[in-house]
Image 1 (cartoon, rainbow, N blue to C red):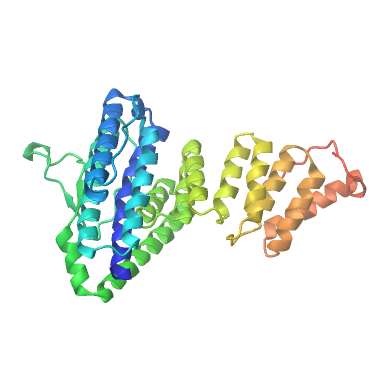
Image 2 (tube, rainbow, N blue to C red):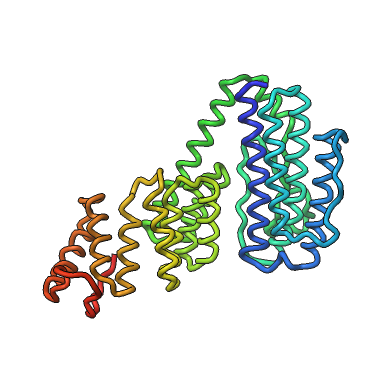
Length: 359
């Protein structure tokens, strides 16, 4: 199978499973809907049907499952099944099996995922005001046909399906078409990020969340996950923000910002000692453009503990990394001045004075 075709299939697979993962996250992390009997029963059906699909279409009954747990499977645990199945299908795409057999199997699996995503999303849609971002519409079709004429003015939940004919057309069109789709996807992703940052500048945090979420629906990156978390924090949804940071860390452990942001949320919660752990991990991260941030936030944490010398050391390290940061430079000067007055710069220990600085 051609490398670009593999990338196309992996991209569509990722869109469908990420969509269902976002719904599971909404059911279990941001609402209590995961505990409803309706959700629990649907989860059991999903896991049963997933096993049956893999057994019949992937393993061709050369391997059989030994059976499912006797107890009910929680929606939170169903995420593990989703991720495991996704890894299995993606592995088969990468390997050089018969192209059309793999294509049929992957399209069927993606549409199986979308079918269950629709059913789980219905529970969110009817039981809460949580907005779960839809998948991008590149090759995927959307169907609004499940509503009656009387409901045309109502907000409705769309049904997504991957059109096999469209996939074949792209394959027949050749490599240039796929490269064009990748370019368009990257452009949309970057445009949404840019719009989200502009909305933050205008203090329109809800719009920022919408833009960052749309970027995430196009490409699931640690960057987009961290930004969705950040926008949630600005709207006061701190637990949701923390969960997105953890997702970003799991996805790209070398990416620094989610460690720093998670530490910041913990610091704001008053969990000062716990926040240091995440700031230190952020300092050690490989990918971090604004490496001064975890030092600034560590300084803020030491200020909260009234350990002013340690705070000054952190701010000085941050200033060495970002000498252009005027506000930080002024903070260092003021803190140095206060500590000189108390004589604390000549020896270690707590000054016993309260200094109020914000960064």
